[in-house]
Length: 295
DNA sequence: GGGAAAG
DNA sequence: CTTTCCCAACGCTCG
DNA sequence: CGAGCG
Ligand SMILES: [Mn+2]
Ligand SMILES: [Mn+2]
Picture (cartoon, rainbow, N blue to C red):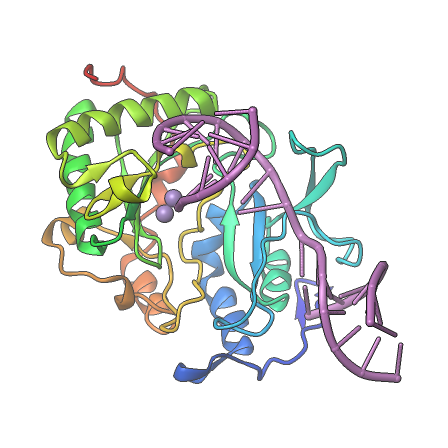
């Protein structure tokens, strides 16, 4: 395959990746090419953690931080030395269509970019409220929590945006000025989440233990960390229904009639063309107010 | 998916 | 020659 | 302190 002058060999385009839906590896590559105008703005300049599924959505998978030695030399990359490792690795940075197509060709169904960018990795430009439903809770519970969260943030003057994770949870994103460390962001999210949980103790927890999560939504503030990632907006997920991470309007969140399965490899391109990128304003960072006092 | 190590 | 293995990592809370 | 968790 030829992409912007780069030769990208991709084998087994007919391999079934979602057998129940008749979708192939070729369909995955086509999806990312078609969605590139929407996906790329959310990947540019960010270290990417790849998650290949070489045998398709039902098969084995693994996280890949380091570009392998045999990766094409023209791929944009960024050197990183993890705090626990002695060796420096090179991480993929999807700055253009060729990188995106190469990753898809590697069987990368899921794209997991960092919340910070290579030119200032310690200072994220995205703040994440990661809403994970515990056992006995579900996506509807996440929608309710997201709505309460929105109602809390709006009067504070904090612009926030929502998207499905594509699995069972929801992501509420706040674009921020790159002035805060991950630690500071984590503290702010924890304080805000704590205050919200105090109002809905039976619906929200900040405690990752299984017992505390039963019937509640976990606000996983710890996801705001160096080296932590978030499934990219419009990224496909390795689910049987070929769901994707779909941006939502706050009206959709409030009405609570959407389900993760409504947004798939098949339906997302149409929706994106019709609605545009609901997350385009993520590029405009904002300062954070003092966290609401309390607990 | 692709290369290296193990059998 | 064929099969198996390897591909990650951060930081909090609990026990 | 290590184990478990996302
Ligand atoms: Mn999540
Ligand atoms: Mn999580």
